[in-house]
Length: 92
Image (cartoon, rainbow, N blue to C red; front, side, top):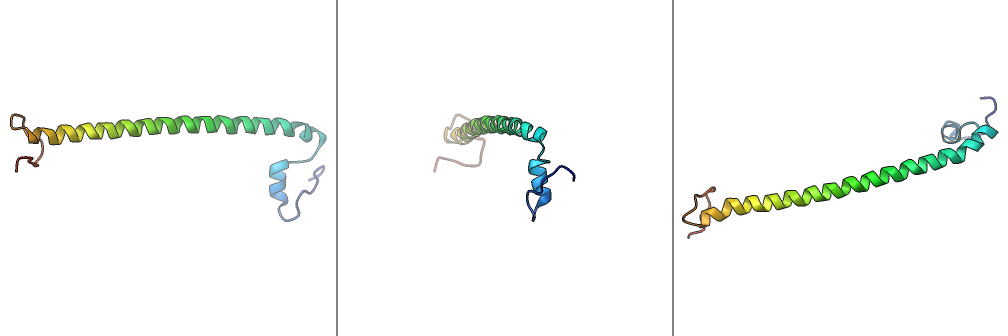
């Protein structure tokens, strides 16, 4: 391609995809693209951490709901006045 410097003999296509044509115009845009990619990387990291936080919160609520479900399932079978929801019997 005219105006392009060969950056790498083994992988000229990768070098072209990474750096493009080394013209004065592209050299001026390189810092801008670098800052833009850094901004998007930080933004995606923020959203990943936010999603991880909500995933941990949802896991805690799921464990809490499971605990209360087990409590509501097994506790009535131990009390003679409450109907049993399971086949387990605490009275031996």
